[in-house]
Amino acid sequence: MSSGFGLKGGVGRCYNNWVDFLQCTKDEQKGLVTLAECRLPRNDYLECLKHHKEKARLYEIRDEILKEKDGKSSRLPVRGIISINEI
Image 1: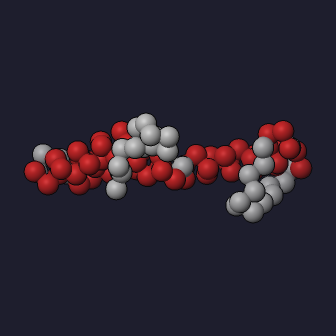
Image 2 (image 1 turned 120 degrees about the horizontal axis):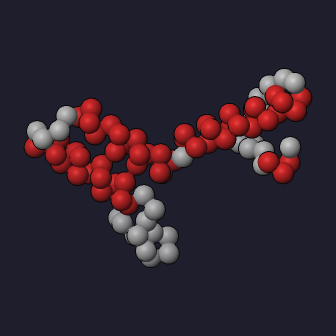
């Protein structure tokens, strides 16, 4: 899945997470660890790729700022993250 090469030729930003996950799955096949123990390296790798948790936290912060500003929670479209300067 991961070649190890980044956009500009160096090591990719998620390559170390991929190596950790790959090593965990190899250890799981050998019976050294359980599949549940590989969940954390897998989640770290996926978070590095997609940033789901980071985006969710930004939306929570944005909603709290808007709630304090307007007195109500405003659920804006998912694609429109408001920067702090725009609020």
